Image (tube, rainbow, N blue to C red; front, side, top):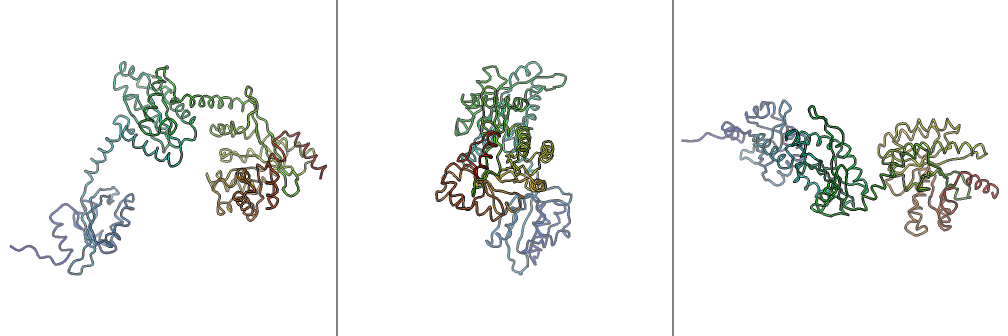
Amino acid sequence: MMGPAIASSDDLLRFFADRTSDVYWTADANGNLRYVAPQVSRLLGRSPSELVGTQVAALVHESDAPHMASLQGTLLANAQSCTLTYRLVRADGDAVWVDATVYVVQFADDSAAKFAGVWRDVTDRRSIEEAFEHQTYHDPLTGLPNVRLLEDRLTIALAQGRRQNALVAVLVISIDRLAMINHTLGRAAGDEVLRLVAQRLSAGVRASDTLARVGDHQFTQVAFNIRYDEDAVRIAQALLKKINEPLMLHTHELYLSASIGIAIFPQDAQDVAGLLAGADEAMRACRHSGGNGWQVQRESVKERALERLAMEMDLHRAVERAEFEVRYQPLLTVADQQMIAVEALVLWHHPTRGELSPASFLDIAEETGLIVAIGRQVIHAACAQARRWLDEGWENVSVAINLSARQFDHPELLDHLDRAVAEHGVPASVLQLEITEATPLRDLERSLRVLAELHRRGIRVALDDFGIGYSSLAYLRRLTIDALKIDKTFLTEVPGARDGAIVAAAIAMGHALGLKVIAEGVERDDQLAFLREHDCDIYQGFLFSKPTTAAEITRIRRGLSVSA
């Protein structure tokens, strides 16, 4: 008995299409469908006539499209076949998973078809695989990653930490006395408590971090790319605060506590097992000492964390009591040594530690947000002092004030500046604000608007720490600024060849952009001579004066006027 006559490639596919639930198709060299089997109606909810002429890639789910982009060219170039698993989009918008086997073909009848393929519906199989994968890597009670996934992610975090020279913290969190809840209210109640705690803790986890459930009453958090050891303690404190919040379970109001152990890469250990063991050991030490707290593997870290916490508490009180004083450092013209401005620098008169420099507390102030309140006090103090200098006859007085990123981003910055200059009766032009290179990049479009408003008010802006950030000519061209301030680290080796070349280039670039150039940290005569040789505009540094009192600035200015 003879089989059916096959006249062309499309006839061949129609023959098979009638005998299977798979969807056979052919496409031309451009990936346009020439034939689609009738079974496509069940697969995609679209008739073959709708699809003929449509590109295969247009039917692929957008998440899988990148995998398809180079497939056609690869197949034609190598004359091979391949099998992929991807999603197609149905007429109703749902996605269906298919195994797609595609061949490059050349039929004897010189058909225009270049691809022959088949789609096999594997949606049910994929659902089972995804469910199995989720069960393999996640805790069934809380839905959080389990130990297996935690260890995988910690391995990746440590690799990134080595490349980026970053700290990674591991925190083991044990819920205290959960066994008592299980015993008195039942295991189901204990499980519900764990689910609720997991939800609370998850709400505060950064996208780069991982929170996992690793035991009956234990969670572990991996915190990637923290700046200081003490930051891990701050994370532990935040976790503990969430756990301590009252929890309503049916008619019962529960008060929970936890013991948290901390280990930090690379100081405490440099591998997954060592960090997990170290954090677990610290957690047990915390639990044995009464729980409801945190413990670190190294005593030195604990001491620094407690010191930082005490500093933060004192800083809150200092803001309320206005324990800050503003000192001023002269800015002079390089060419003729005329004092044309001062920079305001804040000191803290601590009641027990004495006079503290900005380096000892500004980082903490920035992290806690207290920098905004401190900055307002500095602005008011600077405006009040500028008023006194104006009254003394210093006609062109100018006070430079450093603004942190948090201050610059604050929505009330412009309003506060307006209130300060109005309250003290000074023109806005007495102020020059100094921001770092990276500050405007946090939200460039907003920054451009703020800088334009400052310029409209007559408030000058200098780009501080120039040379150590990410500036480019294209970036600088967009900023409405008045000056560049060369970071003092480049002055250390001046007039050495390498740093000298950098400083000379920065001066030339600043002038090319129409900006004044300020050099800070000038401590030697040869540095000043180099700046004069390269036409730097303004300098400041210990060579002329350290930061000092307003009264001393008045004396210095009068002395310069007499000598002039």
